[in-house]
Length: 307
Image 1: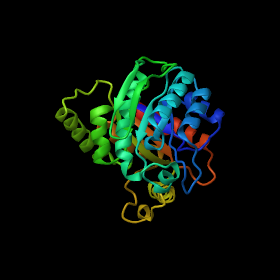
Image 2: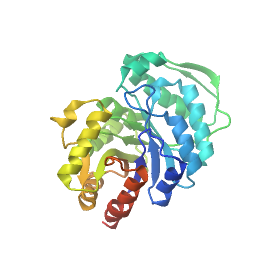
Image 3: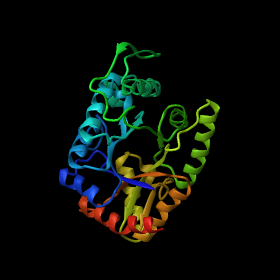
């Protein structure tokens, strides 16, 4: 199983990014926001830094807020990162929505973010094909356009759909190379994957054998389960400015506890059908990213991979 880690839009520094590769993680990812209640870098800048700091592992956004950029601009930016990385880019495309204010700031209608994401995914595919093309959509019209230089790989980087709602799942079934839900339990992944297969069958699509069945998982490792779970819930309440993570959602969306307990929790996602995990490490107060990465690589991943 592929296990990557996300910095969550936080600049850890090039040396720490390089250490992610040396520690044996399979990928290094970032989120993004334009405006938010906490500091967050944009995904293209951060992915470029990750590409420069590493040599072998997958890098990319998980996820880029797709509707905030015109798809032509996004294609050009992503192609540049793909070439800089030597063809190691994977792109998870999300619709955003956590902060409507950033849509207003970018001049993008919040209520059309789903349609913009769908059309952007279609347009990225066409740009990454290496051919000239024209496109007529509800929102975007392109006439005789192309991408030069092209991506490092024929067909461009894999495109995953990130999200947790039915529309994202259906978009992945129709158009994507993978699905990366977040705020899903292992049990919910099992149901969603079955639904996605049915969605694909309904539109006559045969999913490729290497389709990425993913999950973005919050991981709080290094102490007793209750204390670690509390730390995870407090982080989510702060991260999303959502007090429900300290109420009716407490304990639901964080894999937490001692390394053995964390490995067991991640193994449940594998048993649910996940082929790809992207972990966000919820650190203890004062803990540096490198310390958390070393703990998880040494203890949690070692147990998970032996199993």
